[in-house]
Image (cartoon, rainbow, N blue to C red):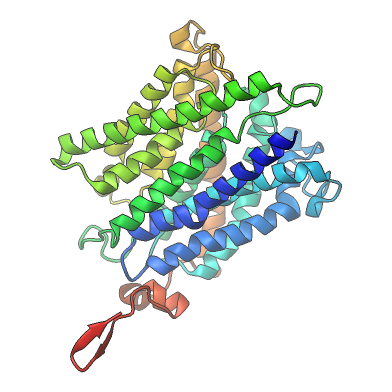
Length: 420
């Protein structure tokens, strides 16, 4: 048991690192120079707001034994403020809290450069309460969704990535485009920063996937050493090779479509592969992991370009990477899952029939509808009360100074010389 707690402490710290600073840097580098601080702040504020909400009622809504409305969620007051939670559960509470944090923070990439920080702060607790905590209960807590579509979701294809991807897409549509979108270049201002963020996300993702092992058997005892080693090894390996395959596939499609293989494409390919293997990392054999990674890298590389064709300003491709990658990873389990993997059952390609594929598709569809409808209601409520957008003049000048009174790169000019 000492080894279990040590492992989970490390895994929890790695998942928190995925938001601060990894996601913040990934998105921050993709921002324009006049918006980078605001982008960083959206991740850091998400960590603070969602973390506190999770302790107050998020854990209870997600994992309390007192289910409400047929298992859509659990009673938020049963363990309000972690009342009645045993001390030996607290590390698992912290681990799950970091999942809620990064899910909410991911959404910010779809609405960069144009949203009031105050609107973001109001949105976060409402969204996690109505969208994240119920889905976490229905999937991780084996609630209503699991009872109708007993899908495999090892570490959050539906709960994290489809959830965040749908929310980001809905907000981008309702809030509207950035000024000048489609007419003027909106290039990333610091791609090395983005690549550092992507590398840190890859590093932290081992906590995300490998830490999501189910550690207790039906009698409440820990997994034996052989099971533990088998499952950690498979999830670690699959996470790694799927990501490698996705990077190469993304770059290959980029080269074919645009004639260049870009550093932004490599960074995005990393995230696409990690997203797609997340629900499947314990359910597939290595060849299946490579296939899922390659498919996700290729399809997501193609999908992110569609926003320009449809005039849809998903600033940093939350839909193209997280929604598309999350759907692919969730559904492809129905093809590539194998009973030979520690957490898998035989999918269609292993003689398991259409049952698993149907369950995976059904779970993905349910998550899309659940989050899409509720996010739209929240978004319109904020739009017609306090409003989402900063002033047009502030958006042109830069959201960093308008919202925070700061700039990331102050250049002072004195007697003809410039310095930082």
